[in-house]
Each structure stands twice: as C-alpha cells, then as structure tokens.
Image (cartoon, rainbow, N blue to C red; front, side):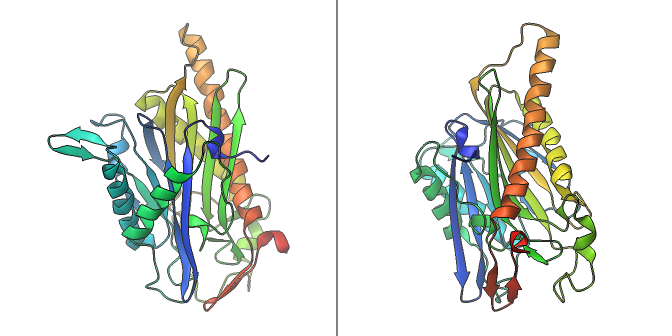
Length: 316
C-alpha cells in the first residue's frame, strides 16, 4: 500500500471536483482530530490565503479545525466558509459566548478558465461537501491522487503539463508519523528538468507566469507546541525546493500548513534530546513534502477541456 497523509492517525481527506461543461477545478479538505495544533509558512510571492494570520504562534488560538485547499484563486477562498459551516454544525471550533467559531485556514491555486469557463470556480457548497466527504472517510483511508480536489485544474511548467494532488508519509523509529499532501500547480518543473519550463512552445499560449502555487499540508502525530509546529512548516518548504525548480518564486503562492495531533510525545529528557527529536521530525517533513510533490506530478493524467489539452508529464 502506498504511503499517504492519512497514515497519521485521525487525519482524513475529502475531495470534491467538477470536470466538463467549462469546469476543471475542485476543493480538498484536510480534517484533523479535535485539538490538533496548527501553523503555516507562506513563502510564495503571490499567495491567496484565508485565516493564516490566526495561525501565528503568538496569537490567541492554536487549534485548527480544518484546512481547505481550493482552486478558483481568490474567488475560491469562499469554500472555507462552507467547511467552517460544517465544523460549526459538528460543534467544532473556538468556544465563544453562544457557540463556537471554527478555525479553518485556507489557500488557493490559480486555475481560472482552465476548463473553458472563467466563472466555473469552487463555491461555499463545494467546501461544505469536501469537509463532509473527509468526515465520512475511514481512518487510514486511501487518498485519491492526481486530478482530484484542489488539484483538478492544476498544471506545472507554466501550463505545459498537468499537475495534481500527491501524498506520502514517513514513519520514524520512535513511532512518530509524518505525512504530507501537496497540490502541485507550479511555475517550475520537477527538479533536474528545469530548463524545460520556459522552453519555447512548451508553455500554453496566453498563459503568463504569475498564475501558480503549490499548496502543502504536513501532518504528524507528534506532540508539538505552536512554535514547534511553525518551525515544522518552515522546514517542510525545503521539500518544495528539492522537488521543483524554480520554487518559491514571485509568480508562485507556495504555502505549507503544519498540523500536529499530539498523540506521540517526543524525547524531551534534555535540551539536546529535544533538539534532536525536532530536527529528525522536521527533516522527515521535508522529505515527505518532496515525495508528495513528485507523487502529484506522476499521478496526474492528461486532461482535455474546452480550453485545450493539458498533457501528463509522466506520459512524455
């Protein structure tokens, strides 16, 4: 069985997508168990995000109820409202007088018009459906890769090849599991093939470079505080740089979320032991991201729409 982010106990993934009739877009929701600590690190020059400021380690709330990855660029961020509504119905969120306020950060890729209709983009109802799909999935369920969820309209190499959803996991000797899910919609190409991304005739006509982003969720069953979770998100960006060239450009919105469920304690018997435990975990996070990105590229299938044909990189 292939490795996946849902190898982290309690992590669930839900996809909703539409293909055809002008559509080539979707939503992915990563649903962690209640009480999961979260953080984020945004490195791209063109991010489209929602509620990321709330994940700073110095802010009031450290718990994340769901993470939404979506197509539709800034328009698609409305999908977070649907996932938030689903969480509220389940009583999940930060307790306030009269109810709860779910903490649902989100990030978007640019896929507008890739199915032929610029207005065909994810909405609140799709966000709700993706959250419900995640909740309905079983523990350790397989994750659909390639042309699914937020990766449905993803491309790489300035539109030359199809991108998509990829996932992976790594299990450490101390029982810590680190998983990653990536939505690969990059300006660049898999590392080692970078000259191809700007080769004449390789990019789709009329596709400017500033329409890209790779989104990642890293999850672990380790017990981390908000600052350690933030550092894990930061370290995981190394996996993007190892997998894609170029990465973190002005034309990308590269964003990494980190989730820590807290089920497995790290060795904190001394300061040296703590540092070694964190370095080991964060190195694994970078490796898991690299593998998830490459998996997303390899899993994508050729897609033909009203806007043209996007060939699979693995088929050329």
